[in-house]
Length: 451
Image 1 (cartoon, rainbow, N blue to C red):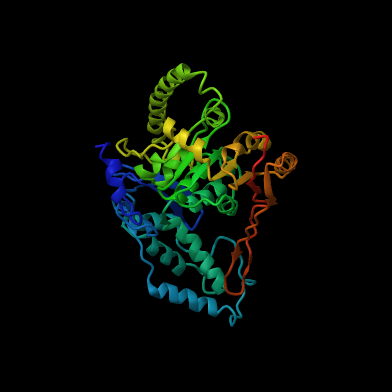
Image 2: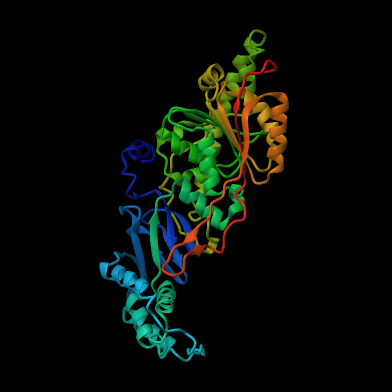
């Protein structure tokens, strides 16, 4: 069964979920973001309610679901907003300008609600839906009619999030994954914001049929974004300083098929530089035979280790929630593996033609030491882009590149993305924003006699 899945995933409709795919669940309009792997036995906890994720299989991305109580157990039901609700919201927004009511006479003493907790529990046991409970709370509120239209919508939304939470089924791609991680755990992706990620791909000129050299120390987000833009064409070499590769657990959330995963390769800088220099080809022909055998042994051992990593990581369905809220997934759902060791033929091809672009996102490494070793691997006039959270490492790298005359068109950019709340009579920038999205050093490699 597992051998047939990579062949069948190429004919999957990317707009509709299938069993074994990864999804991003947006709960209550961004209040909580959860990554999950869909299967018949996967579940997710909403407060004190545990619901099965099986109803999400076979639904198009962008579908909206609502948590219903049910007589036996809670479940997720498809929710389609009616046109009357949309018209009511539009009319309410237009009435804000003509409204003369205010909330000055309302006293918040927790005595305005006539419906008790026992009454709500009784309604749940009788099978009342979340919307019915919300309407009952509104009908039994003594101050609801005295509130302004904006306060009424705010009260309704607050009760809806508590008694009838809504779940938006989002497709995980580079933007949604970056936004989710940056909102919850930005340190895992090196504080790489979505505008900085898009600027990296644009300045490095990542297009179809490109050979991209990537240094990814942000959990695999950069590698997945480059592979997504390549779309199954060209090749991607993920290199790493040191002796061990860096983890790329975020790649499994992109739902890449086997064709795209086969083009994501790994190779150490030592192998790339030795292939680029080629000084020991005439002296060590017998030594090359032994290295080929060792590379094949390393490739088999690496495939075994990556398979063990995938098996162990499949138990973690939601990376952005605590362990007690993780949904359980059956072990039959496996994603195609990415990041195999680069074969000798691919390394030889990169040696002859050079890489078409270089992208570095390594906040824990010195930018100049990486660029000094990896820039000669690019073809002439190839662009490169380097991301760092702070300015000083990129400024030092830019100064050294100018002294060595290794690149032209050097510039340091600071992306700035500002989100606005656009609502009737209350349009303003969002209060909670990130102060900085990092810095990007970009340029073009030139020919130097020293290299």
